[in-house]
Length: 150
Image (cartoon, rainbow, N blue to C red; front, side):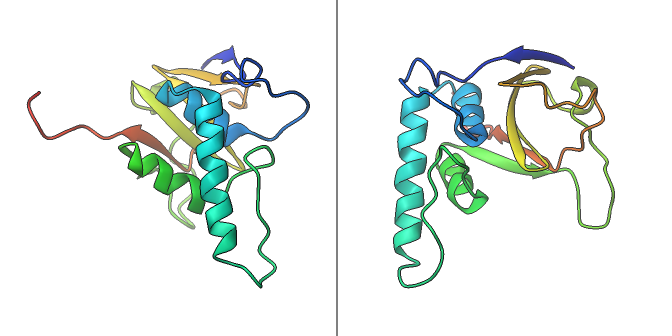
């Protein structure tokens, strides 16, 4: 699978230093939204979620150090993206991170401890996550098709 190195617009948004921002980067690349916009929305949602846990040990997480699925999935759904699972517990790997096993179009692909953008069979990420086509795909988000004719 081909790979294009990208920070998803992170540097252009003024961010510097080391980060674990795969969620922000993948959403920015796949949706075409500016990195800063995606970052701020994920930060807002994470902060709201943390406030609902006030008094517990659940900590506020920054999009700079990782975002849990309970934060980013509702955001993607609000943007019209739908989840397609490709693996069930105990089933074993059925889909790998390779062009032949994924649909065409813009995808946000979940692999072990990472999200990456795949656009028409090409990975767009800060590093090559494919493991030479052997990395197992847990599922992917894809823009849902509208039911109208326009």
